[in-house]
Image 1 (cartoon, one colour):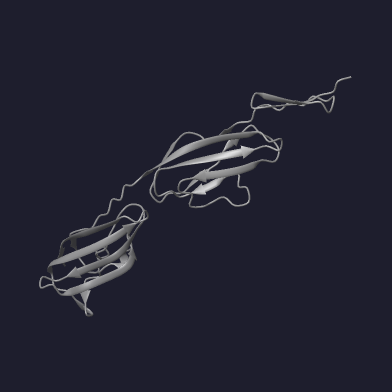
Image 2 (tube, rainbow, N blue to C red):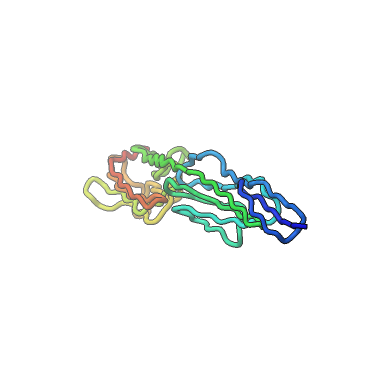
Amino acid sequence: EEKAYVVACNKEEFQVEIDSVFISEEPISVDLGDDVIINLGDYLTLDPVTNAIGELDYDWSGVEVQFPCINNCSTLEIRPFFDTNYEVSITSLSGCVATDNVNVSVTKDRGIYIPNVFSPNGDGINDRFYIMGKGFAEILTFDVYDRWGNLIFTQKNGAINDPDGGWDGLFSGNNAQTGVYHFYAKVVYLDLITESFSGDLTLVK
């Protein structure tokens, strides 16, 4: 009596005459979902859905994988700074393979805002002059000068949206005079793009 062992994988059949038991495996699939749009600095978890059962091998690839998968990760946490296409390949115990990919687009709404008036009078409203903005940015330098070009305040390697790091209206321990000052600032974003700002600032009481 002729004996055969049959495995069907991804719509192909392989027959070996070694056994009388017929085993068939349905084609496996994997789905990473629809393409995604995120803001610069956001985290995203890629969690593939598959019909495969049992132990699986996961292989991830992407142009910019900031958090590479270690020890056969079934999910991947990413924080892309650029538009990136990610791909996952899964392999079942019987050697069946399925792949899928997803494109993650990064919106770079930098939105830096620097006010042109502040009133350091201790009333808790607009008492400090500091850089504000959306997302994530680091202040490389932030300087304030008086009308004669003297450096009144400087901040290096600070964070945006931090009032404590801004100018409190003091100069050499004394209240600065009311009037117009000039500021210069340079910031760097997560994707290493730098941007400079300058303008006038009016100090009022």
